[in-house]
Length: 287
Picture 1 (spheres, rainbow, N blue to C red):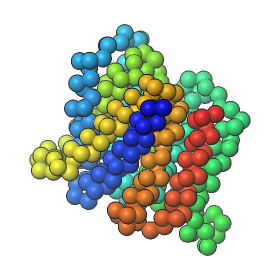
Picture 2: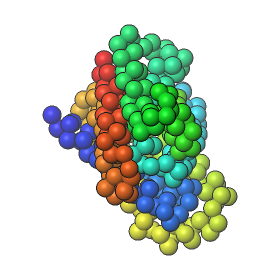
Picture 3: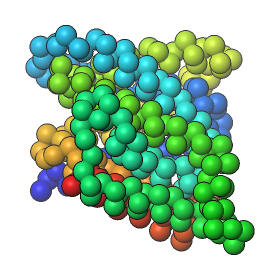
C-alpha cells in the first residue's frame, strides 16, 4: 500500500505549494509567481529524461501538447490570480468542480460517458460549495451561491476548474501518445516557455525581481515538482482515480492552513464544505 504514502504526500505538497504561492503574492504579482511555480519545477523534472525510456511519439502528441499546454498556461495564471483575490480556504476547494465539468467535456473529447452514480457526486460537490459560504444563508437560501459567484477569486477558480476539465482530457491523449513521465515533462517545459513572454510583458523588471526573491519563489516550484514526482510514483503503483481522489484532500488541508497561517475566518463551515466536496469527488472518480 505504498501508493497511499505517495498519494498523501502529493496532497500535502499540493497544499503547501498553495501556501507558498499565497505568501509570494504578498510581495510579487501573479505573473511572476505563476511563472516561477512552473520554471522552478523543471530542475526536478528535466533530469528524469536521462533515466527514463524515451517513448515512441504518437501522431496526436504535438496537437495535444499545443492545445493542452496552451490551456494550462491560461489556467495556471488564473489559478494564482484566484489565490491573490480570495481566501485560500475558499478558492482551493473549488478545484473539486473539475470532475463535475469532466462529466460534460469527457463525452465530447474522448467519448467517455458518465454513470448514473456520478449524479451523487455532483450533488455532493454542489452542496459542499453551498456550505463553504453558509454564513451568508441568513440573508436568503440562495445567498451562499450568490456570494460564491460574486467573489472574484471564486469566479476565477471555477473557470480554472472548467479549463482543467478540458486540459486533463487532452492530457489523456498526450499520455496515450507518449508516456506519463515524458508527457508531464514536455507539458511543463511548454507552459514555462508559453508563460515567459506574458510575464515579461505584464511585470516590470520581472527577471530582476525573480533574482531578488529567489528564497520566496524557488520553494513554490520545488513543492510543485514534488507534487508531480510523488503523483507519478503513486500512479505507477495504483489506479489514477485512487491517486487523484487522495490528492484532492489538499483542499481540506488548504482550509486548515488558511485558518492558522493567514487567519482566515469560517474554519468550521469551510472545512465541512471542503469535506463534502471531496466526498463528491470520491463518488465520481472511484465509481
